[in-house]
Image (cartoon, rainbow, N blue to C red; front, top):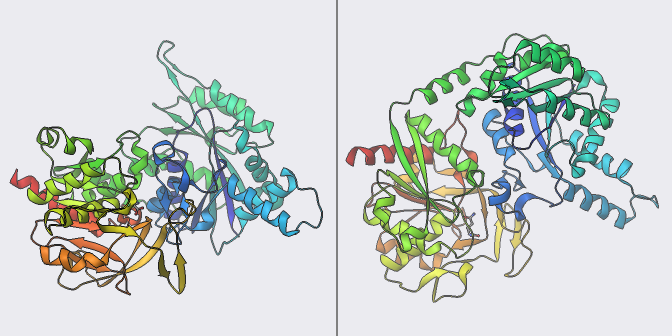
Length: 541
Ligand code: GLN
């Protein structure tokens, strides 16, 4: 029997609900259960693909090509369970499905209403496409009290009646702030937040209270009393120094025990050895390397969440701490580059869109190539490296990408047709922007004897994509002659997936996003190797 845990958040946003959900998933897994994590997002966009990552954080892409919320990245990294299209839904998607059904006449003349039609669609989403999972953890985006969230809260309220108390649990994440002038932790915001939940008919079973210090017994008792929750079910979620300590900290505070108690299940203590091990590695690194991430915006770190984590995983694999410096690409166009790159052991140009900042990224690729600094170009970063090689190695001065308008040598251009499995995919310039990129997992064949073949240790790999433009194979010969090798291609040989410069200590560009598949317990081989290259570089400087 699958049990459902609904996770809501209150008081303020950014409390780390995604990480809390992922950590509880990991703890239940460590107790031997099969888990699945889902996210219900109340915003009106059909998917986050059209939202600015600088506002909403990165778009996480699944193997099956869904553009999803970045929290699905946390879920995958913490549990190792690959997220799917059916693990993330938004108000926009629910409404567009309901309206499409209405247009088809599927409701047989009924008046379509939020309750029951929209709530039924949400409930269907929560309970469908499941196998033999023991637990489904369902995180509701936003904060209790948001207007957009109401249909979702109503749907999960109904689900307790539909599925029974023994199969459902409500976990509410709140904040217990410390007020320095009073010298106290305050419980009132939590009380108000629970009151807000109660007003829509949901009584939380467990309260997970974020606090910057241990919540004293008396305050926990007070929260329990006012919020009608068992005292042991009021759990402190303390700030920790690394995200890998979150599951361990929640376990120490009794979270998984209380969840098992709620569901009346008796299991042996969880096996947390791998979490203990990772926590040790992260807290006692044997060295440090510094990587410059060259981007257009360097503001919101969440815009490159998976990337930052994949770099950490590369550090874990090499037992070093990875420091990152977010460098504005414009310094490569104008400023004094060297002063910004002091003590840097590798340069990474990540994914990106649009012309602004591109010349700086091209200059960064050149700088890394000429000075023999490890270079890792991801998606846009690969395309910029190819333009750089075309201009400065192959002598095609007017090389560019058609993403920035027509050019004489379009070494990067729009692909209008390709195959995904047996399906022909087509795109046109000026077509719809939402969900129309090359998305999801595609196979890639690596050439024997190349650097990436050694790194992966196999010929066939599968990686996730999210881009509209491709490196143009018309220029392959010229580029290879000049010293840039096309070492990974789509199986039909049409789409370049990886380029490298053999005559360089570490220079790789990939059309896909390897960071999306990196996990702390299985660091991605490209990141492991890139950090190893940076360690070698650090010995030189
Ligand atoms: N803008 C480029 C494209 O659409 C690269 C996208 C990316 O880096 N994800 O092809």
